[in-house]
Length: 244
Image (cartoon, rainbow, N blue to C red; front, side, top):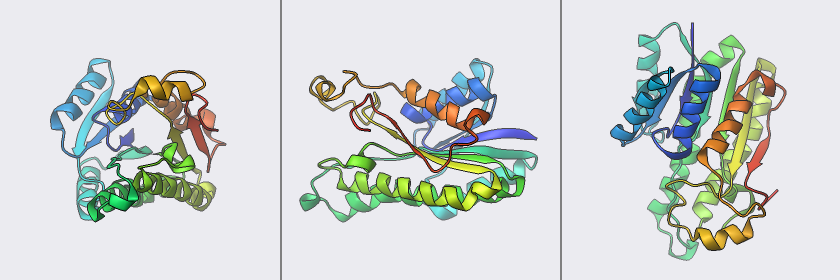
């Protein structure tokens, strides 16, 4: 049986760093989910393989339940002896705007990717975890889901909902040996933060810098390990001290 880790939104940024780190630390076969950027997804796969790991790409839009189910069921049919032991729900988008000016698409698409995507992927993967009585579900939330952020009512609602869902699901699955935790990054160097006024924002952070995707990935790797077997239902901040 080949042990696998599925990371949604893993072609770039935090997702890519997580995929690479899990391959290094745990020798998982990495399933790199992506929505549109085939080139970036294959670059992530190639880097993992080049460094001695095992990986493949799997394309689907997390917010599309039928597509998620079809793609994952097809993968399971083609790999009957493999098991997804770690699921990292990382896919997320931002469409910032003041609520007064926010349109239906800006509200709905952000919630769909984070919350509907969490439901679609987790619901499809969960049966095998329950059968084997083992698994790690790690949801990438945000500081915005804890303290809120002006201009991000949609994103804050999505990530706040993901945090609440993590807490509830952890209680449902604890007796099955499956842990569920949320990780809430602060300002992390990524495509999402590249247009932010970093020089000004760093003044608000006690450590006076943005974090790196690799630092988030190391935390995910720990939560995925046996060393974290007694941690479930938690929201773990990684934000340089800006909020705790």
